[in-house]
Image (tube, rainbow, N blue to C red; front, top):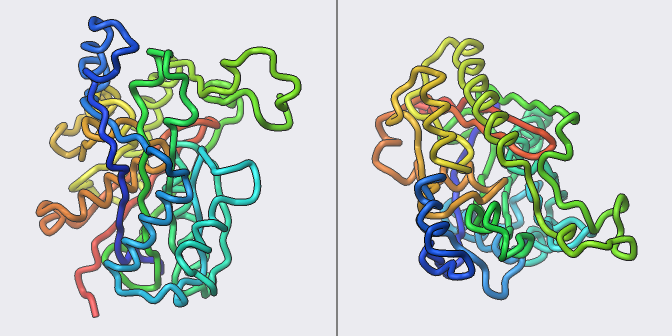
Length: 322
């Protein structure tokens, strides 16, 4: 069996409020909180994705008291890598001194954190002892600062999770899904082999883009379905549900569709905006550090993002710890 031992996070120090987005007219700035529940977001200054990922990993090692040499594998979930190659995980490995770990990246956009937990769980069951999943995103470098449809709604951040054969929460059930027919709904068109730099004619092709209405419908449908499926498969009602922190209105709609009280859902999107693949793990860390975590035994995670991809996880508290 695979367990979450502990979690940690790192958020850049630079906080940007809606009122500071002066490139947009006041009437649009006022709508950001109303449309998505976002008040502030964090942006890096001179850090890259591996920098903030490494800071989250270092914090995790400190919290757990683990020696870096005891980590066997490092999985970096990111859709904003340092470079196309090599894997961002390799630089995190070097910074953190994980000399005995093998490491690699995965990109499932906003579902990446849960995808990483699934792979970590499989590695533990295959005999690997200690796996770190770090989800790190620097979307401020991928967004067009003049685009009101995307720029205000994303932020930067990282979170790390230690997975082992014993711990606080069992990874009881992890579900992964994707639908490639929606691969163009969320994308950065340029920079890869499909549209390499010499072929780019429009500067906007270097920036993140998405079909907002399609994403909203997809997130509400798949988010609610994930929660219902986890409950049915495991014959359990969640004490706490942590979804991808993209938009408060999406979370409210998922609550309505599942007939669950909004209070069941952990929400921190107002502080950090959408941190893509890192958002669920940042929210999980903040939940586990809260007093509520001491009272609740069954936690569901649900994420949805580019690919299109979606993923769910049931965490069961381990009540008989050694």
